[in-house]
Length: 267
Image (cartoon, rainbow, N blue to C red):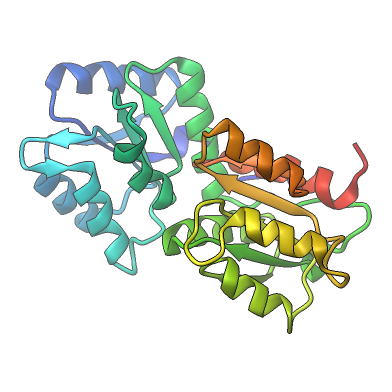
């Protein structure tokens, strides 16, 4: 299990409203998080992150000098901060405005206001990212597993890579879209494919159809990680032979449960 507890998390809260900061600090303290630093805007947040790296950034969407999109972009561009867990708290519900966060590997997107359950789940997801919790499989040696990660977002691939590595999987291959994945599968053997849905060239549905029609790969378990909400598209995905679907952003514990089910087929 993760060696870090919620009470040990060091959090930077970026919120322009003093009232909202006070409310959110209290909610975090109710979850036993005590090491909380705050920033009111983009420049203050970046300054604090560069001085002392937090375990998690929790941010509102808009500030008086920028937005969470700019803050997240600045963090992801710095190699030493690229994997810093980031959580968005926003009343925004429009998919296009949230998609950039989903594709950037955020640990959670919480509604405003959020419930204690929302916050607890997001904090636990952060702990899963920061710690190690190796898979225990009946039919596989975890360290010998070979997993192909397919996503056109580099940061989304990084997030999935990190989660799988923390579960003890060390042989991880990556492809930037379905076309690249198909080319890779023609020369590599893998035990599992974890793929996005929306990708250029060849999307996740088309990749799944290729795998299921392939004599060599038709047996491969496929886990689709997607922000897709269109019921018709999701129905097509199921018919294409995808074994399991999970949302983007996902909870590492959910991925762990799905992998146990997909690889052992013992539940």
